[in-house]
Amino acid sequence: MFDWWEKIVDTLVYETWGMNSESAMTHALHFFIYDTLKIFILLLSIIFLVSFLRTYFNTEKVRVYLQGKSQFTGNVFAALFGIITPFCSCSAIPLFLGFMQARIPIGITFSFLISAPLNNEIAIAMLFGLFRWEVTAIYIGFGLTVAIIGGYLIGKIPNVEKYVLIPVTPIEGELEDVEIKSTFSQRAKDAWEYTADIFKKIYLYVIIGVGIGAFIHGYIPADLISKYAGGDAWYAVPIAVLMGIPMYSNAAGVMPLVEVLTAKGMLLGSALSFMMAVTALSLPEAMILKRILDVKLIGIFFGIVGFGILLVGYLFNIIL
Image (tube, rainbow, N blue to C red):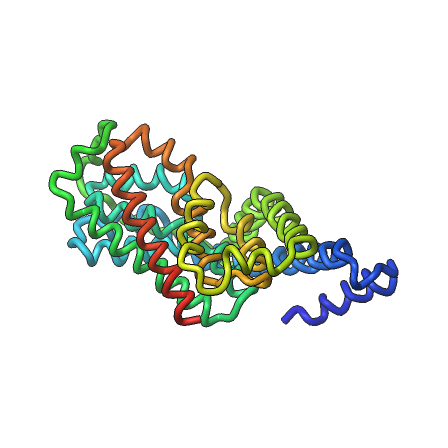
């Protein structure tokens, strides 16, 4: 798909600039130039497409649809809605509160909170561009499974509502399904404006992520990564998860690291576990949740999701 761009970068780096093809700096620079534009193109195109499709949905539709849904069925739909909503773990929390106001069971709201950062369009776009479509499909399936089962288990905790620390005033009456009527051109315009806005917010993360990835690609020996995080080392997945939790980034910033770590010998499951921990179990998310949820429930949430991520990592390492 990007062979044309790779040829241009090859010509620029090796012929126009005459850089040594054996140099670590050359490898790092080539990686940085090639991956940055490739990821930018993928982000702009796929975010625009998803954003355009999203103009046919709105938050009220989601809340109306989830209102009154039974346990598990609600978990499934909440996890699916997490794919089409543009939220990282921290920015999903206001909608999480909105769902509780709509009297949606807390277990179902947690399925959304887990799914939104794991399965957002940025992660899907970059996975599709950097790896095979089969990898993307398996990742989405595993991400949805973690969100559905995690929310379901949390919903089964007796009197789980008592762990909500702030008063959540229910919305009076029944929610109404708000119909949005727009022309095709208006939807396209709104989608492009949203895409541009998102791009402005994340492009720096991409550059930083690709820059770190380029350094690893050029200067860190593959043997070093393979020794401590590759092969059949059982501890690779837990270490990857523990490394990811203190960090905070979106998929745009961490996905370039996944690409280069796997190229250097880290198994894909271990690398994806790192990404999932960064996006779904971030320390800033825990700090925000601490203001609205009891520490015990936060610990249960992190424990369930963390176990799910570990399981996904091991399964990816086995089947791929």
